[in-house]
Length: 462
Image 1 (cartoon, rainbow, N blue to C red):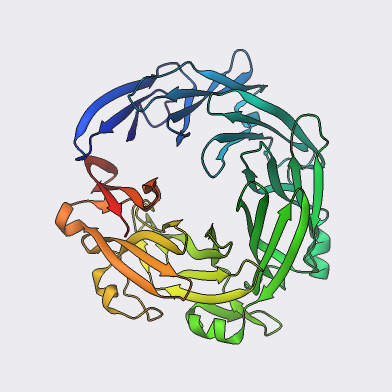
Image 2 (cartoon, helix red, strand yellow):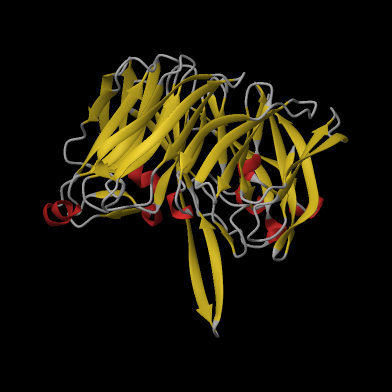
């Protein structure tokens, strides 16, 4: 378990503790790791095949540079030698690249990405990437350069496999004015892939007729087969009219399917979650955005979409922000791209201090999808698809595991409640630690800050 504390709101100095728990989840050992130098920033902690990867960025204002590095930490708490992944010249903080750390399915490969993404109208977009193995040896590194500007070029998703192949999914705009006037997409969806440092990059144009891409993601089913799945609309800034599904093998699109939601699909969701665009065509309302997709053993997919947003209110010169996370729509897609089933998991979360307790995290086994989130126990009594009770009082939060199979059958189970533990489940911190075992964390809520009381557990799914 990794915990972090910082010297101050604007300080980069931090202390990180690796807490090692025994089989009874009691504290066995605690080891500290510190960033004592000014402008050394914590970038994240990741599981890297039987070890922990502590990632940092060292910004040197005087030398006008930033260095990205990774420190391996053993499960016994022993820190290894820090490895430099990349170093860039930056004349100001504004030029610091946007970094991403992406791992393959079995966490044996790390894809590090640094993008020049300042939304510039003049500067051409470029991104550096490298692929490393668990011994922190770099297989190869490349710089991707576009003739389009940073403002025109957006990275939607990226993935790496066990064979050191890297894939990048981009939306590249040509002319946004054209899009506004003609109501046609003024961008290309491009996939750029690399297999080594000698072979030229392969570029794939993903064709979706005149549909607009609302969201998209890529993920490997196995080392040879890449899935690209997303939501599309038939109108600019319109509702979600359907899904698209593509398979890519060896840099070639071997299957491309575009399917609209049927009347029966939309009827399941109710009027609250659907609406019509200007042409009168109905779809899922545009508050629903792509969350994740899980590929199960037979190659079929569970896709989850969910509305997550916040609203800032003013009253008597006082500002208050409320975070919202509502129903989860789960779309089951066959391995040929057909929409086999569509279901809605009722959920209506509202909270006024943080979004830490909201939304959900998903996992899968060979046949099912598992969803961890907070719920009101009164909603357990309501059938799937019915209007859920609003969960806004911290005392009503119940950590919940919901299982769904391909037939659309749901099973909801309580993990722990706030009333029993004085803690709230942190959905985004749930981690898989075995084929059917999940490590969960709960945290005590404290006004204006997070308290130090925590609850830990292991959920075993039969």
